[in-house]
Length: 225
Image (spheres, rainbow, N blue to C red):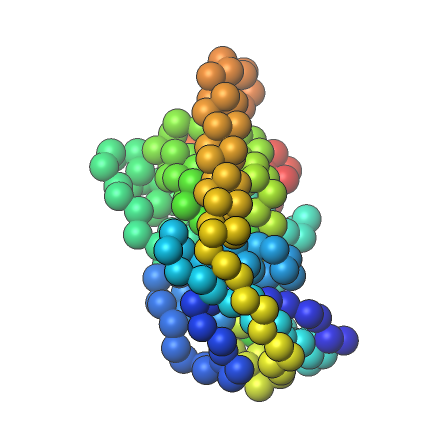
């Protein structure tokens, strides 16, 4: 089965190269894509530079896929991978304890997969995860926040096998004067909705990271789903 995916970049990439990229991205070293054509165009541009939405076909047959949005995984599985790869400023003792607990109890064996599907911690979305480990928002609020702005899923090629099964199709130019304002607007709207939600009073029964640590909540707890 072939899946059509797009990669936003400031240049055309006809042959994605295994082993290149930034090791501190959400899921580590890999080729980051989306099934959303418009999002690829947004991600490809900066404030003053045009970009390209590179289109590919990925042959999924034979690939081992970790889909973090499946019901058997919780948002803490995603967060654990993020904590292992991205840089968080741990300014309080709770943050240090939260990182240690989440990594020790919720980190999937993600490095043995060919492809990973999950949230993208883009700009404001990274700050939501940061607020959670600081104890500012509950796990329910984190789940809600990750859907603000409709950022969608990202598909990440991790293995040599996955790179061998991707085929370049064509590229589409994205003008920064059109697509950068859309990118900015999506982020601004998401932040505005997030701040509006934070104004609500704390609800009894909500799970904060302090509760998760104190109650020694594990990966199989139904309250996480």
